[in-house]
Length: 350
Image 1 (cartoon, rainbow, N blue to C red):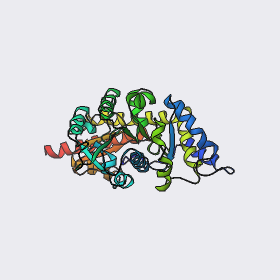
Image 2 (cartoon, rainbow, N blue to C red):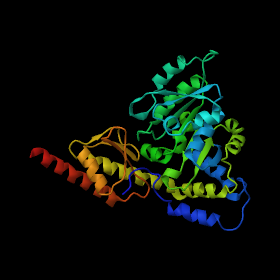
Image 3 (cartoon, helix red, strand yellow):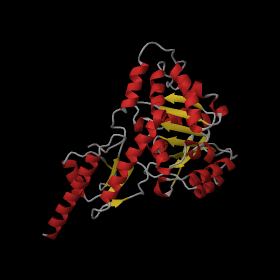
């Protein structure tokens, strides 16, 4: 009954089976194996355009290495102040870019706002030798608040970025969750909307360790092979990363996994809103919930064995559902929360 993260899960059985199959026999190293070679075609078909892709093992590596291609050491990367690259990557983007600066912006529901970004870029000091130079924009889809950028919002941000001749990077650690939430195609949510580079996540949605950096403009990818190698992320037995990604995209496994996770989050949200003194902090659009609960309910849930993160505000918790979250656990969470809410009400009336 662990709702701490979608990282607490094991692997999708289909992806585990793919790993076992890839383990048979020998294969050429460093991405020269048949499975890795097939990925470019598979991803190009998925995105309906020619792409260049590079498997890596972690989302932090995908983000930091992608941004290192887009941003010089004297550059700046604009992102939301809750963005994973700013809050949770221990300076990896700054390290891999050789010293670029993250410029953070506010925005409701964890999302950048195109108009605010435009103002910030106009004031960004482009061409002024005393200032870091605006070099890239990064948005997170789904956001760190569990919300999802609409296609129109992505297009508006991309238009601002490209007006200033800046590339747009998308951190897609929960890309599948956002995609099924919008009900659109991968192409519509990325390059057709103006995204230049995507960090395509799979680990949070059923993989063991598999992400990919996807370049929609092959010219931007020419140095990436060296940066990935220099950064220690060129795997000798690359077939084991690639096999996960291949299975992930086969028979829409990635979409089915995300649909289940999103549905479980929606069930949680619907049930929690029926409990007095419970407040959802953001719209629930993917598989994360940020919820304010009375202390009695939080302590009661923890006593019953439920696990979740308590945020800096002691009454704010984060709940994350996953591809294998059991509906029985969701229902038990709701009935337990309701039980302790009733107990608190009864005690208050005495």
